[in-house]
Image (tube, rainbow, N blue to C red; front, side, top):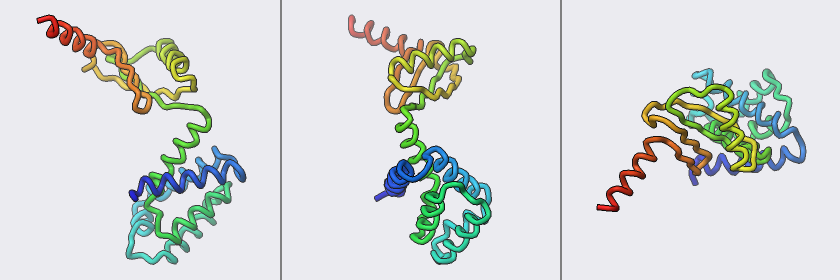
Length: 182
């Protein structure tokens, strides 16, 4: 089983427990905050991810960090100690991402990446977001990108679903139709 699959299992378990015992959004913030702390301090990350460092020592370091940072969610503290005991702290970045995905799904929010040839004004971005909300039936977190290579139009990507209204794609379709008539 891959690290991502294991992280997804931990995230699912954490989310299920959080639904019953804690604020699911606060749990996500606490988990992300601890992960960010580890990633910002290279020496700390080196110690916690190093297989040569015994798990009890890692657990002690995590316990000290928990005492210093005092996450508001005891569920996160328990999970971090469990990960340290099992020497699985290297899963934290994937676990945070998997938890975030579960949280967004629970809140009925999807992430959309929208690519345009030029930056869109705020009113056009809002209209595009509203269209995606109508198409998906969910709230949409929009991330805008600019790529002059699409020439014009919009490419919206929501997970594996792609709405390609770019000029380049339309030109490709026309070329295919013209070749079909030869």
